[in-house]
Image 1 (tube, rainbow, N blue to C red):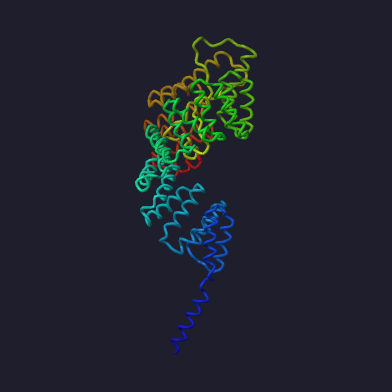
Image 2 (spheres, helix red, strand yellow; image 1 turned 90 degrees about the horizontal axis):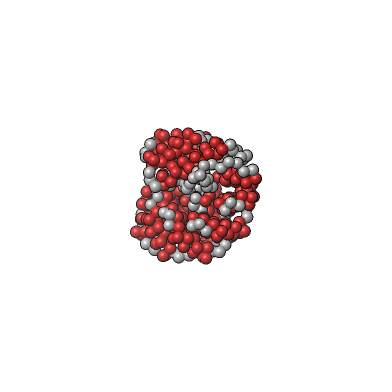
Length: 470
């Protein structure tokens, strides 16, 4: 008799604890709202479902995803961690938490979660894709390519795998392979404007500006409101000597987004190239107002002031055949903003030629002016040699440049890059450190020093530098 009473009491308790029938319905409706992008409605639905007793991993995963959609990352992580505790062998919970860490820029934490996910589900193509993206953000391009190869094995129709692998190969300096990947990605998703711009960037890096123009033209046609497409096409126009057309593209970028300092800088550089110095000065002043401390804009502004002073108060000109100064922006590739978390110049690829700042804003004496021009010519020569793979000759040219102007962070960074490619890691680290002493906000120097420190086994220092670069 007693055993029957115990059984009845046990069943009564179980029935009392069973969630009401509509708790599951609430969770289902919340999932529908989540898929429609109504994150606040989804949070409310999942919360009510949990209040009614539906303590289930899927409910926490759903609410965690909804919180992530609202950028409430702390709450999202809390829910997804709760889902993992409720069921340790659920790969989806690790995957979703990895996505939140990735969105927060915590790539190492994201890698850990994607690793756990793939141990539980080795054929999970999306997890390989996201882990490959994380490796790319950490400049571990070889590992990124390995993961993206696996995605393509599992799902050859996935366009993002080709695009991400193309970006990793581009950042390794393997432009033909990158172009092949971007082409495959475009076959699967022909409307991807960012991939068109990325492929155009590769063509430009290889000196094929006609091909670059085709891609950038196509990007403008695809999205006539894309400021980045106009900026990139304007850069190609200048490379082809079509300066007025380049100026028009940069003016259009400003019209569409007048609050972006980069666009004013680009157009100011275009005006400088066209010898329209007063208009150049106006644009460069605006660029510096929007983004104070921009070393490149300040360098071109100083050159502009010098040219204006020479026009108003002509001085003896240097000997015939002396090299002319060229502003940094006219030789550098114009990158789309959306590509920059994965496409900034890295240790695998130096930034394009950048000129150092002329010292005074008043007219220089002829000897000082000649010294400045000599420095710029040697600096440009050193960078050109590095891009051609002639690293010993690049170091020699940059040695001479730095003797003329030891306060140029761009020249220190360029020489460090050449030494890095020669595997002179200690010397390269020293050059990057000097570049950063002169300009503590020089992102490319941080990225390059990160590569040097990683090669020297200083993983902690490399990670810190990479974080600063980002």
